[in-house]
Amino acid sequence: MTRKFNFSSGPAALPEPVLQRAQAAIWDLDGTGIGILEHSHRGKAFRAVLERTTARIREVGGIGDEFAVLFMTAGATHHFTLVPQNFLRAEDTVDICHTGVWTAKVMEETRRFGKLHLACDAGPTFDATPDAVRYSASPRYVYYVSNETVYGTQWQAPPAGSPAPLVCDASSDIFSRPLPLAGHGLIFAGAQKNLGPSGISLVIVRRDFLATRRQGLPPLSDYLTYEREGSMSNTPNTFGIYMIGEVCTWIREQGGLAAMAERNARKAKLLYEFLDNSRRWRAHARVGSRSSMNVTFRGATPELEAELLARAEERGLSGLAGHRSIGGLRASIYNAFPEEGVRRLVALLGELDPP
Image (cartoon, rainbow, N blue to C red; front, side, top):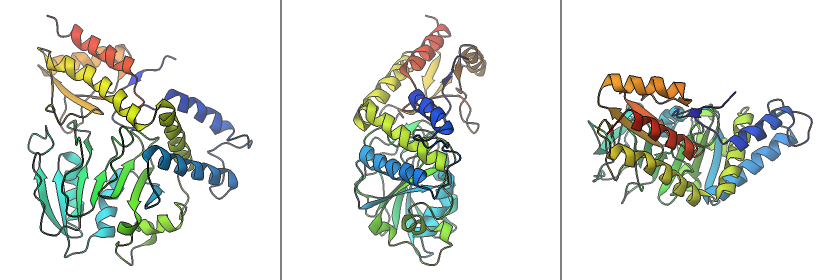
């Protein structure tokens, strides 16, 4: 079977060398005669996987010992509740930078535990990250989503001048560029876009920020439990941890995060340049706020968009439909997505945009 170009927003394309190594590891992990899916999470073989994956994350991300690295058997949405549950009390205020669908969900969860201040608002069009951030007098933390998958916007740098630790949902652009750790108390990411399979999330949390969490939480709702137990408080997603480690090895082999950033910028530029010069297609996000991970765009008519989707599937270009909440089109071109796939999409768009 010929593999398709997978433009899905997640679960998303994985590096082919990683998939090939995983095929072998499912049958036999590191010469043990037992596959990764079968190994006990308490055994030596998986302990070695966990330790090397943690080490590779620290190496690739430049993450020092002041941060704990945690693996949790949950998607990113779970952290929408866990973060305020751990760090917010009823009298506390959270500053949120509202940039789209995911921060709207976070706002709903945050109100269950404390107060909310809208530090910036990119609505109603959500076509750019906000220029100005107005912080409250004494926020507990400042929350933002580094890359908005639905609307295709991305913070080029974290919100500036934060008076409190930053909390970042980096699910869709983590390890796509150098990791901005300064000023952050906690960064979390679902793995299924740039790190590995679905069903597992990575948490990078400053130990001093972690120490300020609320007391008396249920163990599996308490980030400190995962830190104390080395992500082994319950049976972890062993295959997910293995895959994250292999993806980090692949990133290192490509030249690291700086090389990833250059590669991703080049892919995105190919598509944005076409859209900006097209008569029948247009990008949603404005210059200066555009995502290098999720390029969202529209056609001149719904019929044109439908024709593109039909032709794309025929040519092995899959997953180009926009998010169900807004429609349109979306090309998700994460780390592992090959440049050739972007070139083929541009060629098809050009056929539907004659001079």
